[in-house]
Image (cartoon, rainbow, N blue to C red; front, top):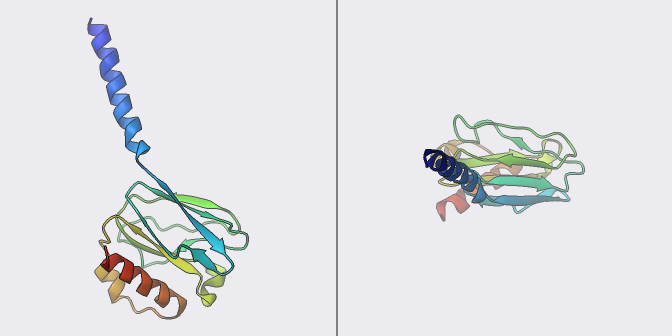
Length: 141
């Protein structure tokens, strides 16, 4: 009887851990010409974002435009990439070789905890357009 309780307890614990990832979603951003579609994607903590069709593009998080303490990452050129976002906030990213053409986007993870910090940044050009769109989306949440 004790052995059966241990087996059932172990199975219940394993099921709990496995079900935690069952609710995570994968969102797709597609590179199309010199833009990412969608420009802004809203996800829950634990969700993943996959960037596809990356023939001559990459994804690079922009310093000071991601939540404090969040992992900044930069993907390899011409490689589809998937990243899991665990920390809430707004993440602004760019395509390194094409940011001059305004190629970038934003991921809003859960509560936009760094909205005020994003608003305080002095940005212009293509990044400025992306930041304005992300702020508008975050304020409408």
